[in-house]
Amino acid sequence: MTSEPKIRANRANARASTGPKTALGRSLAARNALRHSLSLPVDSDPVFSKELEALARQIIGTDANPEMLELARRIAEAQIDLRRVRHARHQLLSQALSDPDYVSEGMLRKKAALAVRILRRSDLGAPMPESVMEFLNSRPEGMHKFATILADKTRQLLALDRYERRALSRRKFAIRAFDVAGRRKLASTMN
Image (cartoon, rainbow, N blue to C red):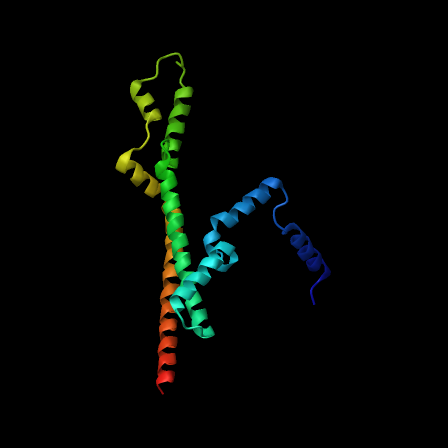
């Protein structure tokens, strides 16, 4: 039997654990769905649902067997997930590469620390050395910019790689199941 104080404590915890209460908290929580949208099933989005059905019909061809249609849907769902992941990776890198003012977070911290040191100097009236101004105004360009972006986005790219590997694995197993069912159906028609 649970004690009365424990029941009161559980109820108080439950009331406190009902999600964000402020507008800011709700907006941050709403962005989670965008950030993690790759974990949502394909059929939760009407646009992808139509694409799923069309792709499944292309895979199955003229065979309208419900079992084969379901197996074709599994293949199509994994293929659409694969496209979604690759599109998300493309968007992530394209946005960063197309930003002409892109500076890594690490470099921003270095520049901020230098600016603070300069502001703490006693001779603020003295002209700023040219090398300091060049450093503060510098931005990565060309291959250096690409390498900087890859280094900065590593965590997000790793997450996308995990989604991609899962989709590839699901597609592989779905194709195998589809092939086995097709062979089984072919064998049953030959007997």
